[in-house]
Every structure is written in structure tokens, then in C-alpha cells.
Length: 100
Length: 163
Image 1: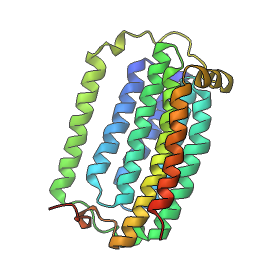
Image 2: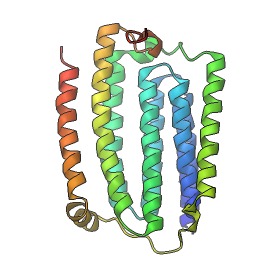
Image 3: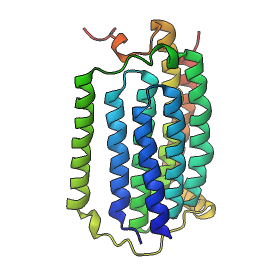
Image 4: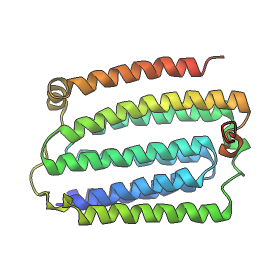
């Protein structure tokens, strides 16, 4: 039987990989994909916690996280389309209207 | 068998996650992300969350695999911005930040009380019937809140992306 810590370690690795990607990229679409990766890592930790706690609460919470993440991706992609129309670029360094 | 499946698919998920970060073009990152989500769905199945695995594949992977390529093609961002990546120093800083974050998380995992939970018990099967009963009895209020959030996200996305 795989101990619960291994699941949590895989989840932590996925999460820190996604966080690295958020800092690594400058394209907004790539940053968005890395945010999805981080949400998925959190889901894995929730399901592993449900497995170790022996009830369904973590799984139900992970299901809600999937629903909210899908809605968030929908809104985020809409914002991306609006940003690209307005600024003509998806580079985060070009989005500097609120900078100063 | 569980350990073999777990270690194989967690390795696949980690490799594809690294590909998501390392691929210069977003369309390849989308493909790698789909692979990562599929292997994580297998991990859900190993953990007993069968409904969650199916939902992950059908809804999440289906959404990612359809909508993200459409947006990438629509915005043409794969061609125009593939050459502009973060500067050299900032790349190493990002990698270092990820390493520090993983170190903190691993410390929390091994130092905190998580390891006291028994992992040898039988998994609670999150099948369709049991998850539905649970969601509509104990989790009814969060489910309704999620419905409100999804509806407002739908309206908000249509409003943001208008001409």
C-alpha cells in the first residue's frame, strides 16, 4: 500500500512545478495553463486527504474545485480575449496600465 | 498493483507537468497538460474516487483540450510570442522559488500531523451513488453556491468577451 505522504509529495511537486511555471512564462496563456496545473495538484491533495480520513468530504470538495476551476478558466479565457483585443499582445510585460 | 500503478502514473504526471512548464509554445503545453490530467485521473481511481476520475476526464480534460486550443488559434499567441521568454536571471529565480516552495511543502508534509493518519484502511469508494447522496445531503449548500458561481461566471465571461 502506498503511504499517504507519497501522494502528498506528488501533489506538492505538481504544485511547485505549476508555481515555477507561473513565474517562468511571460505568455498569459502559458501562465494560465500553469495555474490549472496548480489547481489539479490541490485536488490530488484533497483526494489523498479523503482517502486517509476515510470519508467523502475531500472528494466532494475536489469536485467543487473542478467545477469552480472550469468556471474560472472560462472567465479567464474571456479576459484573455478581451486583453488581446485591447492591447494586441498577451505578454505580461505589455500589460502595464495599472503599473504606476 | 496499486503501488506500481501509483508510481508509474505519478511519474508520468510529473514529467508532463515539467513539459507544461518547459515547452515554449502554448499548444504543446496544452497537450502535456492533458496528459498530466489524465494520469492524475488514474491516481484518483487508485485512491477510490471513481466518480472524480470520470469527471476529471470528461469535464476537465474535455474542457482543456477543446477550449484552450481554440483560444490559442484565435489569438495566434503561439506564433507571435514564442520567442519572448523570461530573462535568464529570472528563469533561475523562478526555478529557485519553486524549489523553496517544494521544500516548505515537503517540510510541512513530514513534520505535521498528516503522517499520523492510517493509510492502510480500505478506501471509501466515491462512486456515483454515494457521491450524489453526500453532495445533496451534507454538501447541499456548497453545491448551490457553486451553481451561483458558475452562472455568474457564464454571464461574466459573456460580458467580458463582448465586442
